[in-house]
View 1 (cartoon, one colour):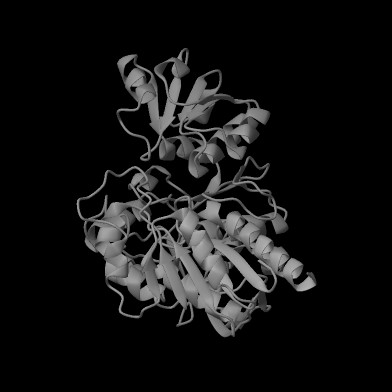
View 2 (cartoon, one colour):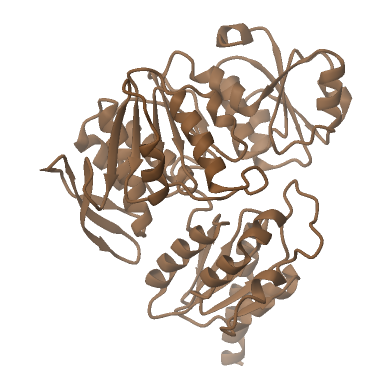
Length: 471
């Protein structure tokens, strides 16, 4: 099935519809008039928003949920033993992967797939907002919410489709985009890729799916991307480079402020208007430059793109401000790889200076913790104090001997502490925090649920101190 028109009149069911990627695809299909149902383990704001758009949502997974369904959409996060998946197989219901469903929506569009180990969500969001600023109204599907709009997907009126391309299970080779961004390349998702070589192979396959006459925007400051490009033999696609070294879009004169970033970008030697971002971090300057290069390649004006990038206020769970209490700031971030932790904590230290950075980190997956325990410890030592929660398993079964203590035992700094209790970690980090400090909740699991609890606890402590002063 490679014609989205064939979906018309079909009943389409999403298993795990509340997930970031699945909900986005469902949202677009609902906007296009398709009949959508879905199931998830709990009712959330995301599932409620889909109900408001016309979806039928079931809480819990059961074979009866797919009665009368023509097409079932599933993802790598869903077990093959899920009762709805099993029933679909037994009854001949067509099964599509999440990537295959998204690829159908991209047919006939000038599609751009944003790939890379780190920075995909932010770069996809930046490109989307920049293209919107240029009046192009792109369709988009992102693995996170854009702060300004509060949505992760949209069916646009234009002929451009921007999609975050998740490489975690290799399914992004289904997209066949017109263009692609590759932000960086580093070993992750060790449950699927045993070596970096395995990752090179799948990314090369991804590049080979790009439409003839299309393009790749690639960061040539990243060693992994540079190595990948040496293996590209295609002559029918363009390679557009960006980075601080010699590149088509060269980043110069970077100025980083606690709450903003500035840079001068030149395109093949021609100096462009200054890039001004409302969010901090050198990594975001690189992400914005990738978006700028891609938008320009799609025909948007540099001035419109720059205006859109300046208006960008971030994505949910990407260095997201959750609250400020008595001079103490609480930030939540999705970082779950050692490199992401390092970049986030470097940004946090600049943001908080001269205050301290206090971290609550939740490792994500047993396999990742086992593979990168020393690297996690090294990155977390950038914080002045870090509490490490127990591992969030995602879909993995436990690996004997693998706990978060693998990380804390690697550190001799005296600043990393194993704290498996979410209740106790809130008390400890709040008791430690002083005015001027920055508290960061870090991880891809459910650690983000602690950020509002920490803010509330800080407010209660502050009110109690005022009461005691006035007594």
